[in-house]
Amino acid sequence: MKTIEDLGDLRGTRVLVRSDFNVPLDGTTITDDGRIRAALPTLTALLEAGARVVVTAHLGRPKGAPEAKYSLAPVAARLGELLGRPVALAQDVVGESARETVAGLADGEIALLENIRFDARETSKVEAERQELAGELAALADAFVSDGFGVVHRKQASVYDVALQLPSAVGSLVLNEVDSLRRATEDPERPYVVVLGGSKVSDKLGVIANLLTKADRLLIGGGMVFTFLAAKGYSVGTSLLEEDQVETVKGYLTTAEERGVEIVLPTDIVVADSFAADAPHDVVAADAMPEGRMGLDIGPESAELFASKIRDARTIVWNGPMGVFEFEAFAAGTRAVAQAMVDAGQDGAFSIVGGGDSAAAVRQLGFDEAGFGHISTGGGASLEFLEGKELPGIAVLEQKTEQ
Ligand code: 3PG
Image 1 (cartoon, rainbow, N blue to C red):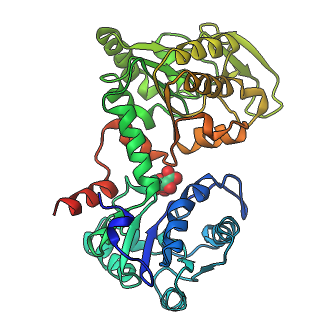
Image 2 (image 1 turned 45 degrees about the vertical axis):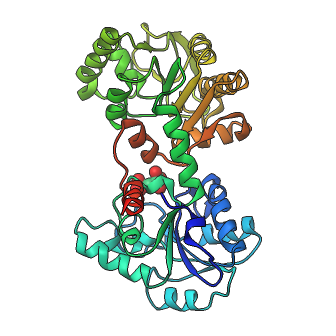
C-alpha cells in the first residue's frame, strides 16, 4: 500500500482523510476519546507537511439524513483541543458549506465535514450512488488518505469508492493496525491465546470458526459464555442466552476437541439479582447457577484460571469484556484479563486488545495503554480481520498499488 510519503510534497495540497470518529457519547459529552487520539499522528503529519486537511467521518447510524444528535460538533471541538488548533466544522457533507469551508483553508489548516452518514449515498448498496458521492468528496480534495481502521470493513463511499477516484494512501493508524493484526494472525508466536467476551456469540461465529484452525487456546467470558455453558448442559438462570446458537456452540466444542484446541470456560460466575451497579450478587459454581439470577462477570477462581492461561502465552488477542466492567462490582474478570496481558507483555509476549468495548475497558479501568502490544481502534473491523475476511477499505488500496 502507498503511504503518505508516496504522495509527494503535500504543501498546499488538499488531502481528504477518512477517520473513524465513531466515539461513545453521553448527550454531547464524549465518554472515550481514544479514537480521536489515535487519529492524531496522521493528521499532525499532514498539517506539518503544509497540507490543507479535510476530514470525513461518521458518528452512529443516522438514517441517511441530518439528525442533530449525530452531529460531529463535539468531535470537532475535542479534535481542536487535542491538536491545539481550530477545526472548522462544515455544516453539511459535500454541499455549499463543505465547499466554502475547504476553500477557506490555508496550508496547515484542518476542517471536518459533517457526519458522512447524513448522506444516504454513503452506505448505499447501489454502486453508482456511492460513486456519485465519492465524486463529490473527491472534488473537495487532491489526494485521499485512509486512516479510519474501524470502518475499513465497510464498502462505503468515503472508505472504498473515493479511493478509486483520487491518488490514495494508507495512514499510519491503519498501517499500524494491519501490521499488528497480521503479526498476531499470520504465523503467531505460540502459544497463541485468544480471549473472547462481549455479549453475543452470534457476533463472533466467523471468528470462532476461524480461530479453531489457528489458536492454541480460546478463553471465553462475557455474556456470550452463557451460550457455551448452556451447550455443556448447565442451566444459566436469567443470564443472556442465545438459544438458537446452542447447537452451533456444541459443534465448536467438538471441533476444538478434535483439533486439540483448548477451550477454557469459567468455573465460577458472579450472579446478580438484576442488571444494576448496586445489584446484590454472589459467586456460584458455573454448573450450579441458580434460577432467577443472572451472570454479570466471571468469578474469582475463573479470573485466576484465565490469567494463568494468558501469562504463559506468546501471542494474545483479546476481544470483548469478561463482564459488565462499567459497574465496579462486575469489573474484576475484565481487570484480571487486562492485567495478565500486561504481565505477559513484560515477559515478551505480543498482545492485542481489539474491539471498541475492550479498548474502552482498558482505559476506563486505568491501565496504561503502553502495557499492551497494540490497542485496536476497530470493533467489527478487527473481528472481520480475525475472521480472515477481505476488508474492502484495505483491498482497494492494495489493488491500486498493484496497478
Ligand atoms: C465501529 O464503531 O465499529 C465503526 O465506527 C463502524 O461503525 P458501523 O458498525 O456503524 O459501520
